[in-house]
Image 1 (cartoon, one colour):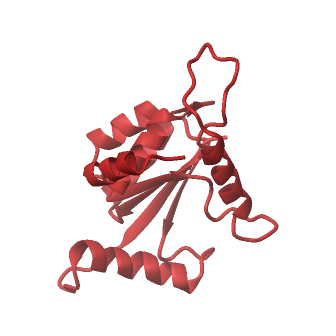
Image 2 (spheres, helix red, strand yellow):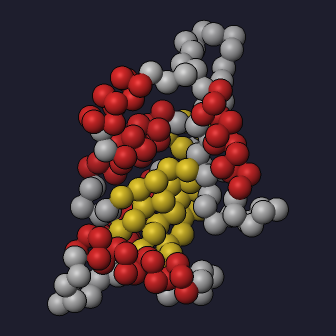
Image 3 (cartoon, rainbow, N blue to C red):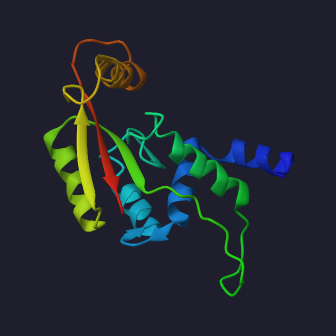
Length: 170
């Protein structure tokens, strides 16, 4: 079980973004190199507002909500124990395979983020904005208005749109 004092220290010392960066940093599978991805994101922090490394969020499954991915993540987190490389026992690593990056919808930023996907050898790079026909009105509204209000206040002097760039590794 987690130690409460250790959790308190971590919670007071790190932001949620830093915690997700640490999870991504630990992962290395197929063409995904978490350390390289986090280094590049850190060196290009003007391109993005936040990111999340997880299982696919909008992938359909029997329940329609990627519930299987949530279960995989919970099981992996329940079974994870740091083990030396020489150990016969290896626990399931954090099972994320998709990076979601929130950014301002500017062509130069989006194209640089897409280029990073090529550098990282992502199997799929997609850009989702508030006009994407695949997503419901609710997502469109949340993406556009929450991004504006949360990051730039309620000022309507300058309209800004957000995009989510997703990278998936098989």
